[in-house]
Figure 1: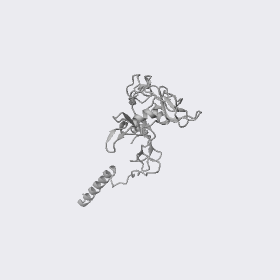
Figure 2 (figure 1 turned 180 degrees about the horizontal axis):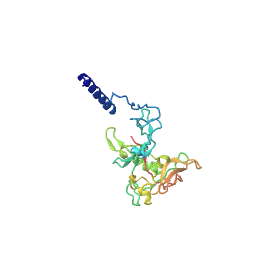
Figure 3 (figure 1 turned 30 degrees about the vertical axis):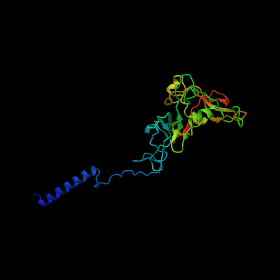
Figure 4 (figure 1 turned 180 degrees about the vertical axis):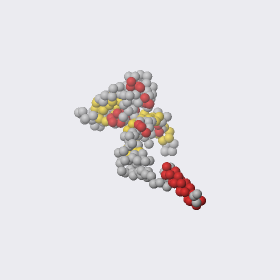
Length: 259
């Protein structure tokens, strides 16, 4: 016959062992299992809660995290740097006859009344064409004295104030409208637009009414004599010809740097 104390100690040993095994199986402090991996930002390996680390982007791209395109990078604190990504919403219609391009920070004039009949009282008429310069009275060869500047931009930037009240506001409240450079103009040539695929002008669809004509830029070409040729884009094909600045065949779309 076993002694009662021996029985008691035996039960206590069995119970203690069972508890120890149960704790160990749950990963408790009673059993020292492997410690979780600690992320070290800056070691070039994205770990734990790090979105990225150096060149390790975890296989992600601008598109995979919700942007339209561009180049994804990793910031010094191991979070995404989306500064090189393109917004899904590229153009914002400002409701005042202008459109802002979020990719370039440029604000563009919108056109209207594309009906084949020019209306020079309306500088936004899509059928209007203008001359660039080198007209009689030029102070130097190729000077910008064409109707693009004297009429079109003159109307857009016309602003009258009595010093207190605005009597006649400039277009969309701004008087710094200008011709785009050839590089700026090229940013809105879009041969993937619906309009382009339907044999219309290859502007982004958000631009609405426009012509398929040659659009002028402020950039001149190096053909001689210097300053007598302007660079332009034919928005039906994307061709960039050099046009004599005295030509009256230029369509134009004004631009300014958005606030």
